[in-house]
Image (cartoon, rainbow, N blue to C red):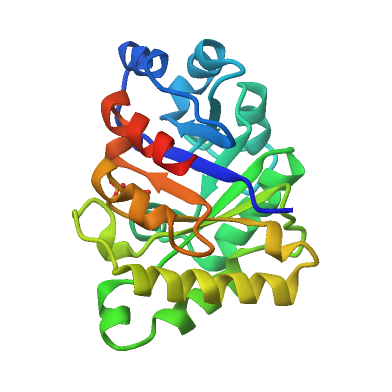
Length: 242
Ligand code: PEP
């Protein structure tokens, strides 16, 4: 079976209850799943408003099921609020909060335990790309961040070069293809259904470059930051994926 096509939006620390009106203007596209990961406070109202049309996810979860972790959110609480997915290991979490591959793996396993799909992010820094380390960095992050319990049903991998996030810069099609091909091979070598795990590209995806990116082999969708905030931008990206 081909991996599902997924257009995923990451609102980061943007949006208020008023922003939920953007959902009403989003198109549906045949064969394309649409997901938005808003700030945690908006998960429940978004799930209510988008029911059946758009899936809702968290942007992070704690590795523990519950307990004394002030300010954190458990995967089961996201699920309870109506989330189906959670992003783990976004580069902003890795850099702002010092999250290691081991921490990301534990969060992904907690997401699976709670019945959520984990979107596990990997990506090289500009210095790592410049020094020719991209493929080894990605292979290392995949090995150390993706738990053994990963399956095509509970896991999505997002390749997000750190230097492309929010910068307006994107890798060339050949560079994206090289990484996605390597990720597919690594997943197939490790998981029985590795060929069916959805692989997203993320980093400055916009209406103007979406179609070219979606034409690259083993790109099954996108994780979109800035351009997911407005239906006028995210809508054409969703349509380009169908
Ligand atoms: C992201 O933060 O996951 C992202 C891809 O951001 P942007 O699309 O704004 O580069």
